[in-house]
Length: 243
Image 1 (cartoon, helix red, strand yellow):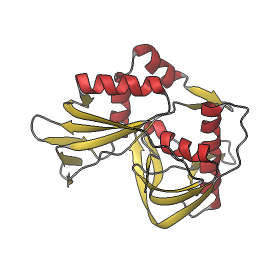
Image 2: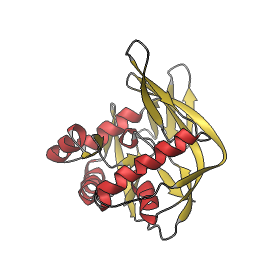
Image 3: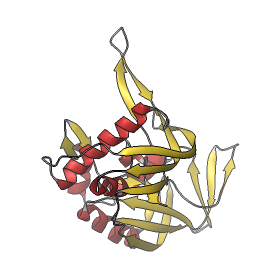
């Protein structure tokens, strides 16, 4: 299940820093019940010693200009934000509270004038998707001196496809049962992909936007639509729409 928020401001514009993912994530957690927000943030759904909050959100969508002197993006209202999760409590909490209280991004209090909910049911074993927020695939490795570093992979590499597929299988097992067996999906890039370098607080993240052709178990494809492709979904990466 996903929903689309229509956002307005009193002054007619919405100003955000270039790297604003953390602000949207914070707004989402604030609009959940305290107990559920604490569970998702501190624990989440765990499999293979990995934690998944099981939600994803898009980039802010709308007409904007970049203001270099202030390093901000100035959106003309209305702007739109998509949020998706397979967890019914998450969707219920979010839709009700956003419509009632609006959304606070930094110091801006925005009105939510409309909440459109939709359910996308994948009924085939292959789909084409377009990213609504860029996809992250990475590995954490060790240097010879023992220090960790992160290596990010572009869509054309086999590591990208393997990591995205393994990530989907883990999330699907949380949804459909840990004993459920899944074969890896086939992921093919369509056309060219744009690289995005995003600062999430003090962390530099590399991600890629574009179109993909996914083929495999319908449940895995449904998981991709509901929870996002790749890693760091709850930080605003990997949300897709079916073309």
